[in-house]
Length: 290
Ligand SMILES: Cc1cc2nc3c(=O)[nH]c(=O)nc-3n(C[C@H](O)[C@H](O)[C@H](O)COP(=O)(O)O)c2cc1C
Image (cartoon, rainbow, N blue to C red):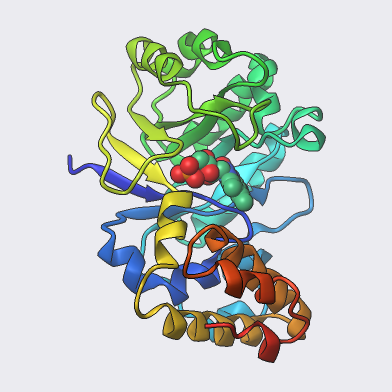
């Protein structure tokens, strides 16, 4: 099987509109697929109405990106997950992913995201539902090493190995680390030694990195940072602004979206001073620093 290079879910950044506006660089970098930023799997929430899957105004203005996309769900209710998965399956999505990595205390303390690493019985039921609904080899998991300690996921490997997952993507940090500090490669190696499911490496990797013993790499921030150095970045940003303005209501949310992206470039010599201007911008005219 060819190695996977998966565009990481970055909520607010690698969103559907971004994946369309930056489809050229995404393809050129060799990405084989993307996992969407998380979509709630909660009673009464229709995933097909989520902007990520084409709901809302975006369906009319943003064509479906040509990159295969796996919707990612966050939640802890197996019944709600089943309903959400059946819904996307009926709409033609063949794969889905479960978020076991969201580190925010408000999420994890309620047993969602990385919090699932602390509730193995709930995790087991979610994996049962995911694999049964999507079919063998079509459901994946994205997880952290643990909540507080880097061996919590390792202890769950007997449970996880029992499921026919497409892959287990491991961000080699604990939830407590959030996005800072270094990745724990030794803890990742221990998971690799214990895993019977295909593994995907994630965390501070470049698109050109290949980690031995894995089926692929998932990359987020390194790719986003590199975009800022492209010669055609102005053109790409203009496209992103236009597509965002078409799907959002008013300038303010478009500005928020742009600041989220431009913030990744604030340490680059090319962007440092532009970022100082952009972060204060209160209109689209002001933020056009490129
Ligand atoms: C702003 C931001 C939003 C993120 N949103 C999600 C998300 O929705 N789902 C998820 O599984 N991970 C999410 N992550 C984690 C990334 O997918 C990835 O695991 C992490 O950034 C490490 O990979 P990287 O160093 O290649 O960026 C997010 C990370 C950031 C920085």
